[in-house]
Image (cartoon, rainbow over all chains, first blue to last red; front, top):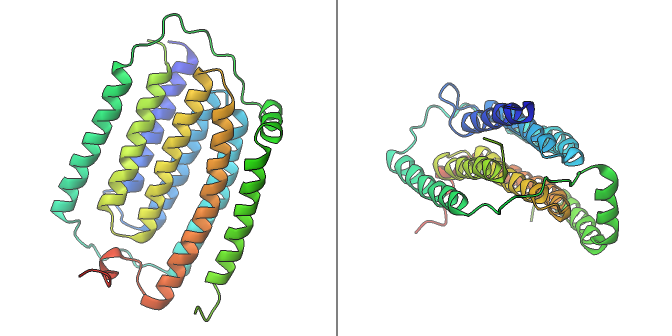
Length: 169
Length: 101
């Protein structure tokens, strides 16, 4: 097996393991633990992005998700000062329903992926997610969505400031 | 066996299923929110792998937009959670059943 393949299995296992620990950590129900494992999930997913030659997106993933978004999460968790969920029982019925439904969804996904006939002699992928081609595409073909997203960020900022005001009416 | 598109798609599907499980099973608003992030990330992984194996950069631009929108969404959602917590002193969905008949 070549090195990228081994790295794929390492990063995929790490991503899924940390993902499980985000959702169902057997040792701690503390939201801070979940947030920390979410950071690990995102960083190992950035590793998968590098294996897919999406270098710019890997950097953005680490900077924006593991940096900004998770800091925001941790800030809110600590601001709210949530006590550990005083060991509330997870409902049996909810657990069974959840497991059945995600099992069904994963089964559908996996079956449809595996049943798809692979195209004969796939050309070796050549696309490189470096910054320059991505930037050219973003500012040429996707200029309007880019501007709309900037407007969206402005709206979100105004909304958040309004929501955080002391006397919310 | 060479690692191909289907391997990445399986990982992405598993991650999506994990996020969905978190949304269904967990009862803490913040953990539910983190599970939503997990689901968004699994979509990102699928888009990047499609982009790689279809020789087309459009998927990566889409991921770029998803990351931006997710950041805005997290900011607004967390502000809502904080406002809710100030009113009700809880971040637990079982205590927030006022709309239940």
